[in-house]
Each structure stands twice: as structure tokens, then as C-alpha cells.
Image 1: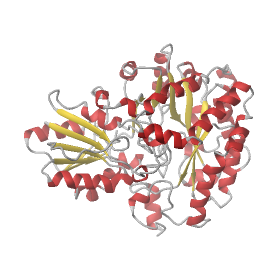
Image 2: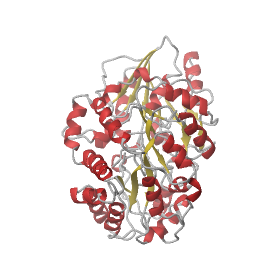
Image 3: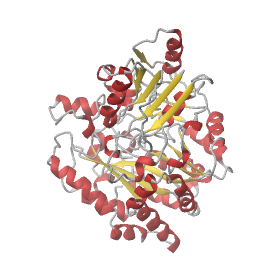
Image 4: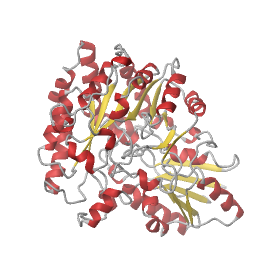
Length: 517
């Protein structure tokens, strides 16, 4: 059987003139995971349109397309093209799960939810000649997960080829997150066994790892055992976690001992009232200053995630957020415009109130306003979002953030990482187009190796500091999801997008990204 798997490009990644590095960060692990279920004699290709052209001159028997909201239009184009030629087309992913009837018009079979149970069932049905038009996930386990088909991934095209996912979902229930809709009907957070996760890590060459899990620390017992198993491997790794997890005594120290050097943290907002509105319970009453201090004291770089446009945000929120982040020496920041994705509580609430401006999914990219804000105009929100990025990554801001570090070496690392990430994006674009992104990995490893060298404070000296008004004062402080969350350049991060710590899911497909800005 000839099988073609496609990750269509997100709309914002298709410019012929310029493309940020975040769209070439991570390979499509979700599709590579699905490929692991195929028979050895099946002929399979995997195409990521973010880094290579889709060759439509072939004649596959089965076409499998992973759909994100801002790639929906392109996904449907490809699906229609192959169906017209007689290929059997499957669609799955976050957007398909949210709007299955829309997707069904362009597919022979659609998949709702994660695919560890539905994809093998479909393959058996397809080979028997009686596939169903829709498969809905019910059984949630990673016990029989096959090894990821990394042989199908062109490693040299990605800055972070060693991305990995060892869990699914997140234990939290934020209103803006796709997670609850995607995992409806079963468990919404579950992990591999520690031994299986360590075996997958062992299969990866080099030193660097990027965990694309929505919340790697979400199951403290699993995380603790995983970090114990990784100690001594010599790995350098990055991941996402919550402010609550960072403040938990002991766990962060274990992570650092096993190689943690950078953490994506969903701070989300500088206004305390927004946290309750969005059901971001894990952030309420947490001292954000203590989170940053604790990470820096342990030698961990911080990538802070912030969402603009919640109902308590006014036109001053952008400057307040940037000022706080720069003043605390946060190395990189990822900003987003609140985006109500179909299937989320936020979307339902906005739709009921008549606040949605349109349903052109290509604009649901966390960079464009698609709803009526409460305390500012849509234009003010978009302008403020762009200004926040510009102001945070000004050289003056980068140097001011670097000045918060106590050593000359620390100041230099901060300036090199933050400056190298955003100020040299045109150079990154040339590297991507030359298909040499993978050659920059040694530079990333060298920078990360410089972190984690400061002695950690004893675990028993850490207390979970609380500040009721933390986000409102100067103390402020995400399988395709159809198989394995592999992170999009946004959420494929993602993120996105937005469960747990995003992301990814870079700043598209959810409320957070994993692209360090």
C-alpha cells in the first residue's frame, strides 16, 4: 500500500519573502507516530510543507493529512485534489475534532481526538475493505505505542530534530485551550511508562532534546522518575511547565540535574482577574517573581508566554507586561492575541455574546483579532501586540534584561540568546531556505550548555510564595493531537496552543508557542 502523509503549511508560514525560524523548529511527530502503525511492506512518505514542497504528481492509495485551524484551507485543497484522483483521504487533528462536519466534506474518513486507538482500528477496516467515515477516540493509553518512524523525517531541515512527546494532554482546564474539546469522551491527560520514555530518548542522537508535551511536569510522580532516569545521560533539554510546577519543592531541582536548561512558562496575564475568567486556576495566587527567581537560581532560562485581549486588559497592558518581563530578566517571551478556537469554552462564550467578528479560520492565528475586546478596540489590541514584541526585543530591552544577571557570563548568554533569536531572523530565513537549519543545532547546544551551572538552593528552603495581587502589581509576577502531539510551528507546538504550560504550539494554534518568541 502506498501511503502519503502531509502536514500542510500554516497560512502565515507561506510567505515567499520571509519566514521566521519557528516554522522550521520541530518535525511532525504526530504523523511519524501514525506511520509506526503501518505494515513493514507499506510504502510511506511524510511531507512537511513548512520545509519542503508537496509533490502532487504521485498516486498514493491512502493520503493522511493533519489539519490545524490556519492550515484548514490548504488541507482541504490537497484533500480535494487527491480524492478527485481516486485516493482515499483521511483528515484528523485539532481542527477536524472541533468541526468534523466541515472536514467531512473533504475526506473519506475523519478522526476525532487522539489516534492511538482509532488509527489501528481504521487500518484494519481499510485493509478489509470496509472503513468507516468517522472514528472517535474512546480508549486513552500509550501502552502499545510503536516507535516513532523518525527515518521518515529529514533531520537536516529542522533546528530541533530531537523533539519528543512522552504524554498527552494536560491536567488543567483553561477556557482558551483546545485540550478539553480534543480529549472529550475520555482521559485528557496520560503518560507513557517511564521505561518507554527513556527508551525513546535513548534512540535520539546528540545531546539536545525538546519535550513538546503540554505540561511535562503535570504528573509529578512520572516526571520525578523520568528525571531520575535521565540523570547521567548528558542531555541538554527544554520543555514547558506551569508556575505551579516551578514552585513545587524538589521537582525543578531533579529536572535541572537531568539537563533542563530552558522552560516555557505560561504566565499568560498581568491582571489577576483574567486568571479566574479563563479558569487558569494553577496561576491564581502565585508569585510570578518567585517563579522567575527560582528558575534563574537553578540556572534555567525562561521563555515567558503572555496572552493579550482578556476582558480585564486595557490599552496599558502591553507596556506593563513588557516592563515586568524585561525587569525580571526573562530571556525570551512569546506574545499572543487571545483567540477563541471552535470547540473551546471561550469560543462558546464569545459566540453566545455575539462578539466574534468572523469565522475565516486563516485569521485565527493568535496574531489577528477575531473578536470584539472588552476594554479596547480591535486595532488597539493588534497594535499593542505588535508593539509588545518590538519593545521586548529592542536592543535596549535585551541589554537591560541581561543586566539583571549577576555575572558577566550570564549577561553575555542572555544577550546572545535573546538577540540571536529575534534580531537575526533574516539570517535564519536564509539558513532555512538553504535547507541547513540542522547545522545550527551545535550553536544552540553550546548556548544551553552555559546554563544550569549555578548552584540550586536546597529544596527545603523553597516555599511556595503566594501573593493574591501578584499579577496586578510589580510583583507579577500544546499527535497530531491525532496520535501524538508533535507541536506545530505554533501549536504543533504548541501549542498552542494552549494547554498546560504551548505550544509549538510557536504563536499560532493555541494560546502558547514553543518557539521562544
